[in-house]
Amino acid sequence: MTTVSGSMKSMVNSSKGLLDRSIYTDEAIYAQELEQIFGRMWLFVGHESQVKKPNDFVANYMGEDPILVTRDAKGKLHTFLNMCRHRGNRICRADAGNAPSFMCTYHGWTFATDGKLVGVPGYKEAYFEELDRSQWGLVEARTDSYKGLIFATWDQKAPSLLDYLGDATWYMDLVVDRRDGGAELITGAHRWPFPCNWKFGAENFGGDNHHVPISHGSVGAANINRRTTTGQMSTDATRFNVHTGNGHCIIGGYTGSDLNVQMLASTQDAKPYFEANIPELRERLGSQRAKQVSMGIATIFPNFTWFGFSGCMIRNWHPKGPGKTELWTYCIVDAKAPPEVREAIRRRLTLCFSPSGTFEQDDGNNFFQSTKSGNYHEGRKYPMNIQMGMNRETKSELIPGTLSPNVSENNARFFYDRWSEVMDAPSWDGIHIDPKTR
Ligand code: FES
Ligand SMILES: [Fe+2]
Image 1 (spheres, helix red, strand yellow):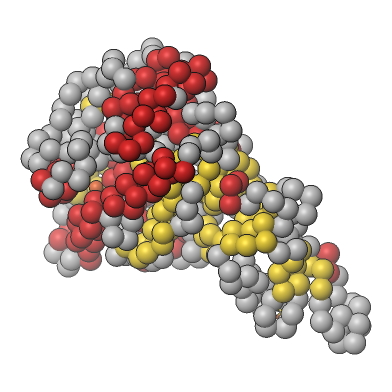
Image 2 (image 1 turned 90 degrees about the horizontal axis):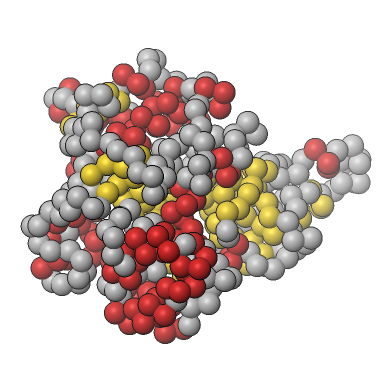
């Protein structure tokens, strides 16, 4: 592993709101991220609706490593490195499917969906039965799920998934626990390259409200998103961002009005459905949470982003190098949502957040140019500014987390503080966990 000399804390000065821009471009820092962040955090790897039946599988990535999520013949979930233990070939080239085993196309080693090595050509004639097959199964990550969302980590010392998510689950429930039966994906992943550092998108969706009327002004002008008005920056004091601890950052909301319906109203075709289900939501999650709080736009540290308006988009910012990201975006809805609602949500999210998404075009070039500044010979000598709204954090009896103004960079500071803590810590023993309170 390439290691970086010096502490990452020196690159993230949150008390002054300064950020060393080389964190986006430095090769050694990126290598350390793969080790310290993507090698240790709980990462979103798929949804149970993708692997409903025994022997279902779906492919994904953890960091740059290809993985397979499987449901074995007995129904247990697993996450495996998609790597043959013989010479490293991928054991599965398909994106998803159902198969009792995976035969490597190089020399034919074959692995069951529980990871066991079950077939070795030449086992008798060439290996003389001396190969201990029990030692050469697939490399497995710890796997757990939260209300259908599957996460995995390579680190056996990582806390439980519930402890890792902490109070973020209180907000996540507003998408995954709205109705009896939970939620499910209605699409495979849209996947496309984004020429930026993965942190730009992850942090932006966790708290950057102030870019919306500027970056997405043309979307507002075209009235594609009825919630965006060109040039106007809403600093409504009843709205907020929230950091729920452990680096998880949410652009939430608390307005005293029927917030959930307001948000969902931006998909007019689906509005009657969401309105009709407010009573069930209220019964499941309580009146206050159902009406006044949202899992608006959020990032579960490090790279799992949500866009909770109009149904929900979820995505991974997969790292592919310091200046390269691959976006994997899915659409998640109530499992009980009828076809016309699914279609309305799918169309809406494709219009806004997909390879051809209007918002995506705006964001992409800004993230790209900002990432590049970390390589400017002169420019990299000057820090980035994340000073907006410093020392304006508050707490509320009503909702968990640390609140900050709706238009601020508090969540960016929380995100990069967590990033530097995880980057510096030699093991999970040195990483603090904010306790779950709800
Ligand atoms: S690399 Fe897979 S069987 Fe040889
Ligand atoms: Fe944006």
